[in-house]
Image (cartoon, rainbow, N blue to C red; front, side):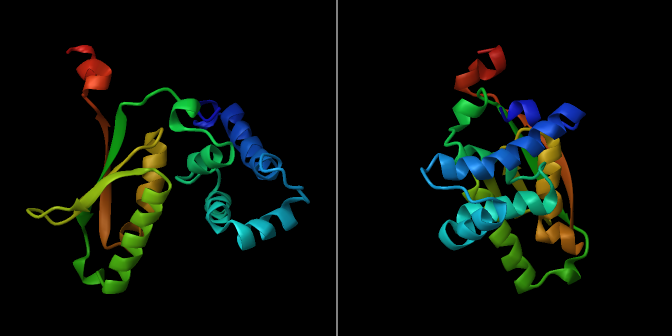
Length: 184
């Protein structure tokens, strides 16, 4: 389901729009609750399930191709990663580099950490941290596309503020589960 709405052609855009619309009603139906429409449904979520409400808010605020889209759909439809897609041995590495160190502040650093916590809570963050031998750091995310990785990078408070720039690298994993990329 999520794979078929991952790109930017017209059909995939339609599927994403349909899925986010359908997800709200299905949230209530799958929990044996009466769905009273989007206005009351979203208000109920804000009061009773703030985590799901925040995922909806994140997706709707930025459009459907956001870091929070897949976790929202997986959570509502109670899908595990294995049910929504085949195993993926790809990660995206976001390399952060200092551009304007004078923009760094304790507040900005806390906003960055809060953002990393959000990525962790939504299952997208694999690893992260600063470099000890270089200015900047690295964030490794598990998402379906480079577009999603770019969306994550561009939503990072360090990048938004202009304090850091980013580069994205697609990283193919070599591990026992994929027989070391078919060679071992």
